Image 1 (cartoon, rainbow, N blue to C red):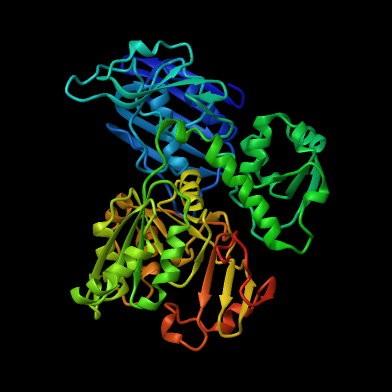
Image 2 (image 1 turned 180 degrees about the vertical axis):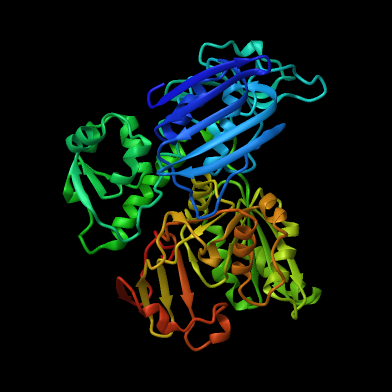
Amino acid sequence: MPGTRVRERSSSTGDHWSVRADHLGAFRRLITASIGVAHLTEVHVRIERWRRPHRGWAGSPGIDGVDGVSMVPKGDGVDVSLTLRERHDAAVVLSAVLRMLQPTVSGFPSVTWTTDVPAAGLLAEQVRDVQEDGDIDEHVRRADVLLVGGGADATAVSAELAERLVHVREGRWGDREVRIDPTIHRPHGRASDAIGEIVDAATITRRFGPQIDMLDVKPLRAISAVTGVSSLDADLRAQLAALGVIGVESEAELPAADDYLGWQRMSVDGRRDALRDFSPQPAVTAWPSVSVLLSTHRPERLDHALSMVRRQDYPHLQLVLVLHGDESDVAQHAPRVRTLLEGWEGEWVLIGVPDEHTLGHALIAASARADGELLTKMDDDDYYAATHIWDLVLARMYSGAQIVGKALDWVYLEGVDTTVFRPTYPAERFARFVAGGTICISAGDLAQVGGWRSLPRSVDKGLLDRVLQSGGLVYRTHGLGYVYVRHGSDKAANTSPVAEEHFLTKAVTEYPGLVRSSALGTE
């Protein structure tokens, strides 16, 4: 396997492998190529180029029977050793090492692999079971999904083995085209305000070849757009788009140099489409259901808040609306809520909490009534574009973080009637802070850290701290599709004590009034 070297040593307890890989991309390809090759009880892995996603983070191998484990950063890379009590398929053992080095999204279905799947590193972090590795428990269906090579006979798979069978061919998983690996082809590190090089298709091919590898990602951050994009191979076009590189035929299609919203919109639209359409995940499992947690003690904001929820084009959505007041207050507003949500395809629940309860109490109550696999918070006065929830779901998929949220790029200052573009907190990176009105976490991860705290303010910070203190990760994606609203005269309406003047500092540009754009959710 290019970029990797394997030395094998055999004993009565199984094979021991020593592996060197140039980078995680090469290691991922080795994992899926090793399915059915050997059975291991011990592995030593050296990755020559590796960085922690966040300071102090270390992943769990997520495999049973661990007898010894170590992870030691050394130079530009890392050394990992894993010893197991029992023999496992080589790919299963290597995948456990990968999960120690690269964040892995939680809640993925149970997947069983056959030995002939041409995955080329895709979903390498999810190699936990190989069909030929051990017996099937007669009392439990072995897999939710069975991945097989394209030539396999679907009739040979019984319902007792797997609920779904996915045929994997090069470039196609089942009935879906798969052109990108979202652990590699993702916009990680792409700044919201960076307008860099514009190069032609020939330059891309000369610099990077027909495929984008892990080592190509960092230099591509300096490139904002590619002209003559239709001359590139379809895989390469999709990979560039997933990285946030804009593809056009001529420079005339690009925004003006000072049009930050235009550049951000073209980049984000392209990456969203590529990640949603060409990743392997939706070929294996449905996109997760999402519950929106919306708490308000200002009934006059219901029209605005519910219009933001209604416009979301994510397919599996539930709203849990929390009103502050007693049962009679909730009953009073229920007909209005019903009218405002009439015709909406999502499900909704209306509950109340006592007036004296904090926002933290309200979010605890909302989470208890939520049915979604993921929970996301929306505020009653901010603006959200139709694709807002899609952006969060995709960021969670490619980052593997426990919490994802948006950067605070766009702020409307009501007191001075000004919109500022202020990308002070760098986007597309692991972080300690995200915009509170965009927090997204799985129900399982929320329960694991003890849920929301019953705080009157800084509820978002309380949850972020809990996740980070437990060894989890927070990822801040781009800020497009979200506008944070600061109220000038009504200071009690702001959940953050920061003064309005603060947001006028370090602004890249200012716009009079509220900028009207569907990309920001303000049209």
